[in-house]
Image (cartoon, rainbow, N blue to C red; front, side):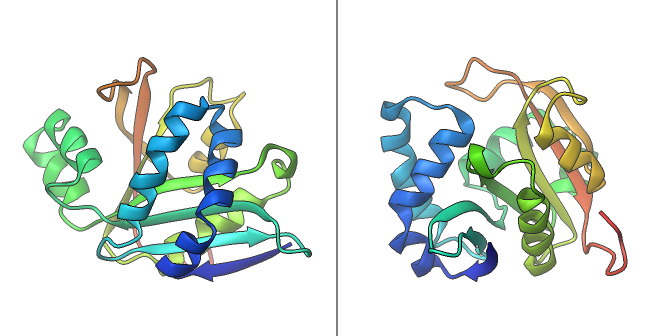
Length: 184
């Protein structure tokens, strides 16, 4: 497996693979995935866009991650902003890199791919903070939660409901940059 940085065009060329990995990792229905395709295409053109991919030796997509500069007028940013108090808005959203997606295909999970992708993505990120959202889950049972805690993410919002999704999410954040010598 090899980890590679992706440009917006790289991601868009592999959008079918991206949507497949996303759907498999999140367990989403096909009708939801069709809508995600358009969102991903829009995200790839946002300021501060950074992406990484993990490819198998034969070029199949095993995982990917991307994010961009979080800004007013973006749906996720505005939802989170509306739920935060003024101090937290300034702290977390003033100069923020939003980790939008970070997924590993289920057969490839448990081998450190997600950690390598997150480290690479955050190393490339610009901003003073980074935020992401993840479905609420028992932290000891969820690989995603264990990964984010290892990376020093702290609770910003808990049990948050985004419009259109019945699940509860947590919004987690940490300061940037990552310490160069931090062992994760």
